[in-house]
Picture 1 (tube, helix red, strand yellow):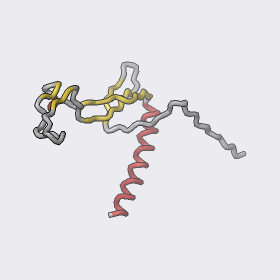
Picture 2 (cartoon, rainbow, N blue to C red):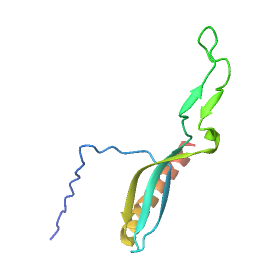
Picture 3 (cartoon, rainbow, N blue to C red):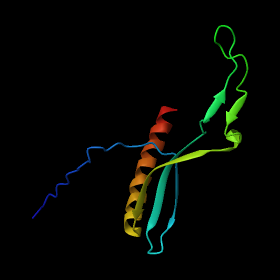
Picture 4 (cartoon, one colour):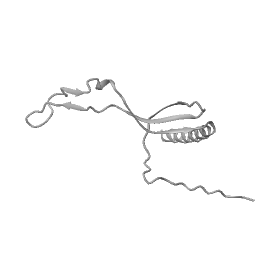
Length: 111
């Protein structure tokens, strides 16, 4: 006898997918995989002073930028985290591998 199992997806009211371009994680002491997803970007200054000309346009690059080590920083905004066991990680790895294959085929067809 054939049986159909129906999955229903429930989303919280504030569900909001976020972009990620990196992950940081580890293996927890209990053997789970811990992943924290982040978006990496250059920082924005707290303060920036510009000299303006008579028409209101910037006439020089910023004279003061706070923090002063601004050019040597990268912001990693951690948006979410996931903890999973080995079996779940293997299933997700398989699913992701399939999606990667599809995208690579699509890329090849478009070249």
